Amino acid sequence: DSGVTQTPKHLITATGQRVTLRCSPRSGDLSVYWYQQSLDQGLQFLIQYYNGEERAKGNILERFSAQQFPDLHSELNLSSLELGDSALYFCASSVDPQPNEKLFFGSGTQLSVL
Amino acid sequence: DAKTTQPPSMDCAEGRAANLPCNHSTISGNEYVYWYRQIHSQGPQYIIHGLKNNETNEMASLIITEDRKSSTLILPHATLRDTAVYYCIVRLHSGNTPLVFGKGTRLSVIA
Image (cartoon, rainbow over the protein chains, first blue to last red):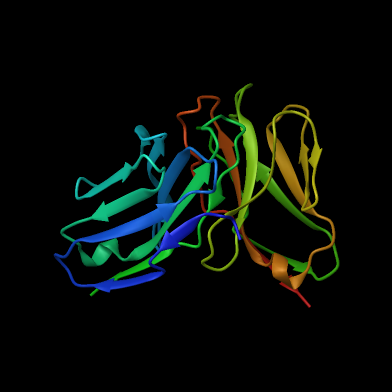
């Protein structure tokens, strides 16, 4: 158990809908990262937050948004869903975004868009 | 980020050492080498990282060549539970640079 909690574990929805994925980082970790893993693209970095502020941005679509709340949990919002958004979404956390810092990953949310 | 090159797949007999190579010929002086693994659709798991010196922990050993252009992850006594995709990642010094995963090496440990 990495200590990172993601909910829900599975989500099935229809095209055009909006969903919210939730992540609770390890106790004491200030940084949260979101990754998307699809069969054809592998693990893709989406976005990082540190202590409530956006820190780095990757290949995140404009239809996607995220935030980190004062209690440090994070939510990833996916809207106007398309079939191609079906993927595993992972959240990771670390104490501090230093170059030698290791990330702890949650078990992921499997999103299926039908 | 410096690019890494890993073989797409490898097999290893159970109980033997698994040696997973990684080439990172364009690595710069302040970049760390990280290894993570992902066991079938679980979240990636940190294994080990290093800058210049060889490193060892309870999971594995990391051997980095003197010129730092390549490294080898060693699992000393592979078990069936070590079957996973292993990612070698080079990370820039800047704290704003996230881990970027490539395709990794799919290690199959065979009984």
